[in-house]
Amino acid sequence: MNPIIEAIKGRLIVSCQAYPGEPLRHPETMAQMALAAERAGAAAIRCQGIADIAAIKGQVEVPVIGLWKEGHGDVYITPSIRHARACVHAGADVVAIDATAATRFDGTDFADSVAPVHDLGALVMADCGSLEDALRARDAGADLVGTTLAGYTPARPKTDGPDFELLAQIVEALPDTPVICEGRIHTPEQARKVMETGAWAAVVGTAITHPTTITSWFREAVEGK
Image (tube, rainbow, N blue to C red):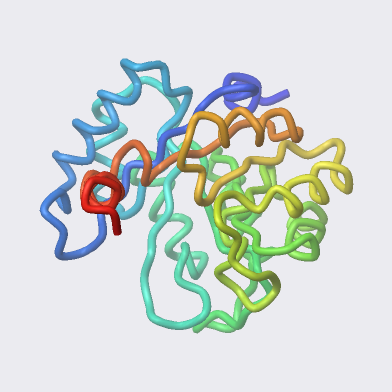
């Protein structure tokens, strides 16, 4: 088994991402956030953008799962072979790639990006929105399969919290593929439940590294909204 995959088994992965225009949207800030997460025990860091990948790789010792969001079409998570290669060159140990069947701007599909990433010595995490996506990604050679896009494609409704049903389906259908649960894990109780459902690891982002959203949760509770 690849040592990176083995190292994250049963562990927490922290996603350090800030959206354009937000106060924390700066590579150095994300790198500091990643370092804080590592010191708290995060087994890996997931991050977005070439500058952030490079900055975070220079700060942490744990594996970095990198992606590059670009474009406004159906596919914007590492949408081409060029984007995937750039993530590796920036320092990503694992490249997260949209694994849905949606059309990419350059006419390629998920499978086309797998070999180029492997050729550079990195792993591939398939960001999926359905069981069909996961099966297709497994067949294409993905090293890890994630529920990242569950509820963000027409394939499935958006659940309030993690899509436990989809997670269970993928875990059962792909017994030999590490399945990462990502998406709307907002409490420690939900994180524990995804692990009990069979996830190889859990990715938590917003509830740890997005203070604007966390503040809004508490404000709404205090104000009774």
